[in-house]
Length: 319
Image (tube, rainbow, N blue to C red):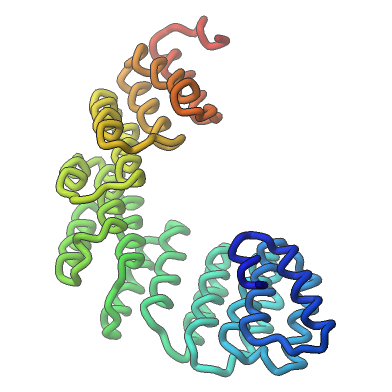
């Protein structure tokens, strides 16, 4: 019941049940402790989390890797970094679950140095460990270090997964390193990830960020496309001023039965803005709310301001 409440985002109800369980005299299991800690993380209730932590120590459950994972998640979500370090110091098991969680949570809070230290202190490193630290450096804009770590990962005999590849492609896009991206693409064929939807979507984004139109080829070759695939192409069109192409991709997406979302409209509006497609821009802007019930956000309005400004129709801005 506690786990069910947590999974359905009813954190308060989960914590009430945990309190009732404790008052009844029954000893919670490790899964009970873990679920309750995730409930504290989701609700930001660090005081309750500390009480559960104390109870876990009393019952000697704090050495359990899953409880350790829950503790790290809870303290990280509550941004209590000091206690994260204290928890990591008690992790005597060689199970990678809490260590990977520690690395991920530190990275999530932009604490790269601490994340790197945690990574270096891991008794063992698997693909999740390597991917977490590579992704952390990629998201922080340190693509060179991400690739340096990737080289060490391969030298250690660890095979990349789809998340590793996607992070590296993201780094290539930010660095404008098309040739390096091509090498990663070749690697996806070697490790059997070339048909992965997640990787294909990352390839589309990489090509467009590098100013290459090969992203169009990728989506045409894909046997299955989701909303992320279409949005990646639309965003690429917007980034590269391809208004006519954005309109055509939007039409193809609709024909495929995919409902556009806020990101879809942002891409096509940006494309229209850069290409001066005034009538099409107004058509899509009004269609957002009238046809799809999507309220325009500040970025959509910014695209329209840019579109009207480029067309010299500033008098329409107030409308």
